[in-house]
Length: 283
Image 1 (cartoon, rainbow, N blue to C red):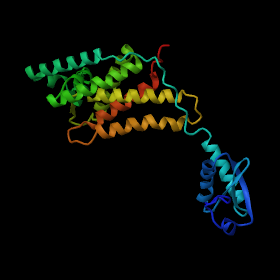
Image 2 (cartoon, rainbow, N blue to C red):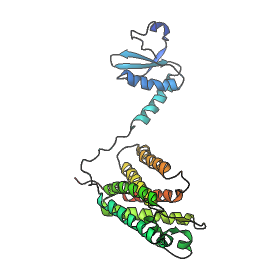
Image 3 (cartoon, rainbow, N blue to C red):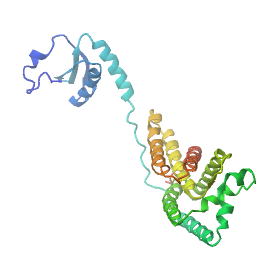
Image 4 (tube, rainbow, N blue to C red):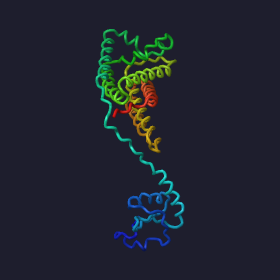
C-alpha cells in the first residue's frame, strides 16, 4: 500500500479515497504494515500516513469497525508471542561419559557371550510366550543387553553413549540411570503386553535409546510448563514435536525395526520425564 506523503507515491492524492478512517497509530512503518495485513486479510486495502506521532493506519470508512475489531484480536493474540525463552544457566551439570561408556562395555561383553553361547539369546530375548506363559519376568531386562549382530550392537552402543550422557547431564547420574532403567523396562513390558497373543521376540538396546529420547523430551516439556510465559501450551509444542520427529526418522521405516518397542520406550520416557523433571543446575 502506498504511503500518502512518500515521494515515490506519485499521484497518491488521486488514488487515495477521501473518506479514510484512522484505525491505529504505530511507531514504525514496519509495525504499521504488519497491522495493515489484518485489513488485507479481510480483503480491504489500507494506507499508511506518516504523522508526528508515528504512522497512521487508514482504511475506508465502511469496513473500519470490523478492521478495528480484528486488530484488537490480533494484538491480544500477539501480546505474548513468541514466548520468551528462559535463560540458560551458566552452571550446568558435568557431562558424564564414563558410565555410558561402562554401559557400552557391558553390552559388548554380553554380545561376546552370545557368540560363545547362543543359548544366552534364547534365554534372554524379549519373548511374549516366555513372559506371559512361562513367567520369565527377567526378559524385559535382559533383552536390552542382547543384539543380533555387530552392526546392531555398534549402532545402539554409539547412540546410547551420546543420548544416555545427555540424560545424565539433565537428570543427574543416579537419578538419570534409575529413570533410564525404569522407562526402558516399562517400554519393553508395554511392548510385550501389546504382542501378548503373538509370536513376538525382540532384542536390542534401542528401546532404552528411545526411552532416553523420551526422557529428554518429557524433561524439556516439564521445564517449559513451569515457565512464566502465558503461552506455555504453544511453547510445549517445540520440544514435543522435536522428539516425535526424531522418533519418526530413526524409530521406524526398515523391515526389522521393532517400531512398537521404540514407540513404547519413547512414550514411557516422556511420561517419566514429565513426572520427574530435570535437575536444576547448581549455582
